[in-house]
Length: 121
Image (cartoon, rainbow, N blue to C red; front, side, top):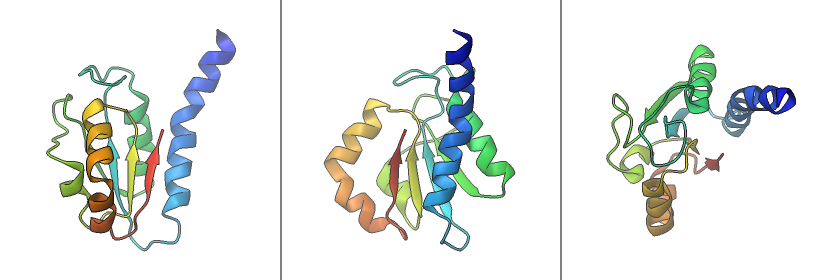
């Protein structure tokens, strides 16, 4: 249990590092983070690793927009709308609404992005 907890605690930093690497060659990258809840299709954001990822990136000065259809304070309308001019979309929580839109409109989403990078965690 202790080892598993230590591994889990490192995951937000690893996810943030993967996002940083994806935009390392982009001047002033715009990052869209999808999902703030603790697990898919829920509203509970207590102890959410996604919020830790956001904090890591924000503390480093990155422009990050966090969107979640379930969690108050993180408005979401569509990935396509958020993708306009974005350099990286990071799916931090696999809400079914995200998966459905990516499946249905993936090409449109990529075409709206300045740098078409979609990462899934």
